[in-house]
Amino acid sequence: LFLFDATVGVMQTRKRMQTANVAFRVADIPRTLRGGCGLCIRLICRPGEEMQWALPGATQAIYRCVGEAFEQVAEY
Image (tube, rainbow, N blue to C red; front, side, top):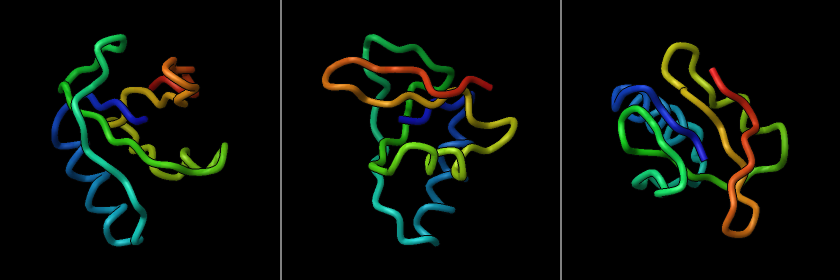
């Protein structure tokens, strides 16, 4: 789960993932988390693979979904 400072980051990441044919979903940020723009990107990948999608200056944080909880992987 990727959080962004602004909607522009969501759009940039979405475009990169579409070009790479990666399955993802743009959604509202879960209520238990807070983020700048209110939108997040969810995707399924192996641990460590998520880092390739982080955009410096745009990605705010990355979380791993563990059941109904969220574990922070990185913060920018």
